Amino acid sequence: MNIVILDAVTISEDQLKRLKSLGMVTRYATVSKNNDEIIERVGDAEIIITGWTTFDAQVLESLQNVKIISLWSTGYDQIDLACARKQNIVVTNVRGYAKNAVAELSVGLMLDVFRKISLADTDVKVHNRYGWQPFLGRELTHKTIGIIGFGAIGQKVAKIATGFDMKVLVHTTSERSDDASKITYVSKEKLLKESDIVTLHLPLTDETKNYINNEEFSLMKNSAILINTARGGLVDQQALVEALSTGGIEGAGLDDIEVDHPSTEGLKTLDNVVLTPHIGFNTREALIIKTDGCIDNVVAFINGEQLNVLT
Image 1 (cartoon, rainbow, N blue to C red):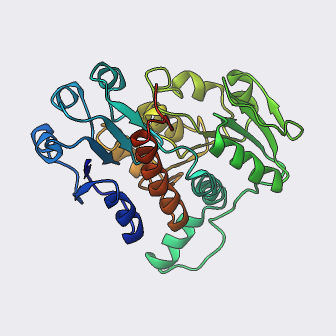
Image 2: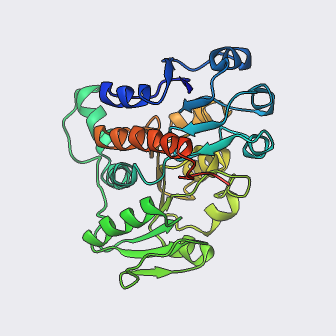
């Protein structure tokens, strides 16, 4: 089999050796500049492993030999799934690999926003001040957390939240936890109205694009904060900037934003926002699990099995 690692996928020597046992491997370390470069890199490969490359219809229709695209990610909004199916290309993802990593970052952002950790750090290091008075914070203990999306990550956040003696509200259309004794399933509207913290754990799809917009912000408490460690597109960014600027909500912690959106520069100027550059998945432990899972999907496909196939 001809295998191409198409972009900056983290892979150990042992994992690369495992992959090479399946066929000839060509490895690239950067994202292609354009569609022509994607097609050139793929060449006559049958298997693609990719984490960052966008596959639109033009690219997919040019991949005559490709049988499987193994995504080095959970999210799959970077690929036109309908077109891939039409081309008989199997697409797989890696699920649940970063549940601990993303859940822990979510709670870390909650703590940062509530306790103004980043602001205080900047005050000491950049402004050479050492006063505690400007940084009156809030405690997570006994607050109400609203979790939207209840897959592996959402469930892990709920488990951590119970350790803070938080009241846990959940809105989900599918997943349910086996342990329902410490959580309450509610409507989206009820969750937004009652939560001190709203945290998003949804995939980005046509249905979830701008899932949180002006209407949702109008329902939230003025003292509430929004946490998004999923995809930036879940939130109407302009509406978020307005809500943060006018006191509609108190703060936000975001691990992904729409970088090219006109509102981004305004977002960066706000003191009540903590921004990180999509690092939720990026722990040593999670990356090992992620790459192993990506290779597992390829092995299953070669053996005529279906594992983590997106339909």
